[in-house]
Length: 250
Image 1 (cartoon, one colour):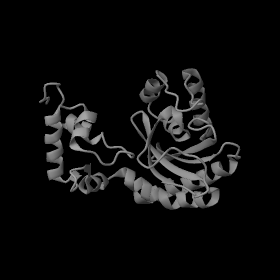
Image 2 (cartoon, one colour):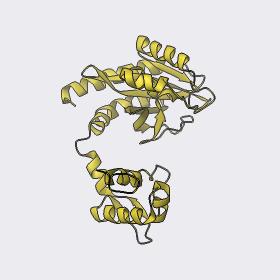
Image 3 (cartoon, one colour):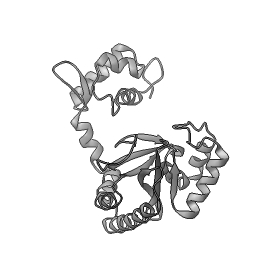
Image 4 (cartoon, helix red, strand yellow):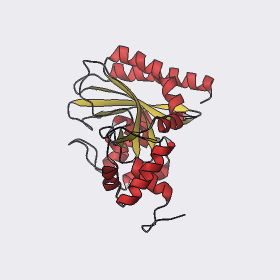
């Protein structure tokens, strides 16, 4: 039920407060949270105080606010994403040892790819993704895989645009994107040169559980690298992960 002059529910206002934190912005003042959330200062301060009391936010000795450990604890309880990550990690390490580039695991969250694990080699090339980072579905190899196997309504929504360019080579034409999606469904792999950065090529394959694609496993290669070994390594890893998931009944 709405209980604010703007019509926002309390839950919506709490979410707005929490969403002001990013991977780059991990510490803020209550005033900054209020400004970034778009809430009245008094409301933002009251919500922050309540969340600190509940342990979902922490306030340090300088009155700076950060996400609380209890929020992390609650998020992990019963998390299918955590169990998926746990099953995938040993096999991602095998890919990492073989390919020696960035190896990533992503799931679909609405119309974005959410990266829940990433392994990186010290000599690996450029890569802007990070754990808990998001990218539009059309703008990375992982996202393209997740989009290709998403429900029809999700595909239609994304194809309806607008398709934001992350780099100069990101697919922004709906007809081109539709052809790419069809190719991924046919071949079971996405190879996306330059979609995020011009110096890199993303390679991703679908990861299934109980007949549905639940994640994408990918590597980020130098632009001129042959993707064939990476595709083989990813497919071997996915087969092993899927086998482990069947035994664990995720």
